[in-house]
Length: 281
Image (cartoon, rainbow, N blue to C red; front, side, top):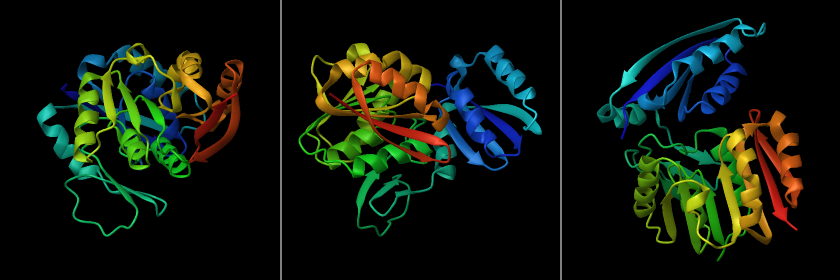
């Protein structure tokens, strides 16, 4: 596992600039974010950081008249300290009254709904981010019993684990980072899941099958480049859930999906983040 840089951005006003800065940083390799108004903390593996990319983003933000202040600094976090950082910041997440996402270091919580236990280890997908919340919320309203699921950008595996708990019979959880794929596999075991195949790689590692549901909670540019692939792997009448982008990106993604023969069903949003749902004709 890598060492990480923690970048701290002091923003004024904090909203909606915390979301805008998060979107910019996600596109250049930042993997996790923590909101501590007025500070946004963002994390990236040391080997993935390109200082010129940071400078470009700061340059863009400097042209925004409505952003009164944007100061930033950074520090290096050694891998052995990372779990301690997460434990100090990871609070249980409740998705309505149906789902609880918790960590193993949390004390026992009295809850009658589904429980997913996640050891983050720097992987994206703790439920804290609006996009993970939106995906979980929509999945809870679906009938996944006996379906095959493809989870692209699985992160901690939270969506894959939830899919199995909702009755899915087979799940391929695909992650482009090897340590994240390992974390997903560990969390599947932690939740007594046996239908999840954690795969390290990109869409090229997906097996030769079609899926009843495809989940993709990734940044917009990746979704745009892979949406044709999702359409090709979806069964007729199968459903595709996309998230990882702002509501202002909806129209562009809907048009791309419709070009691939997908029909737009609905959208949901939370704090300017969006989730889109499609099916295959």
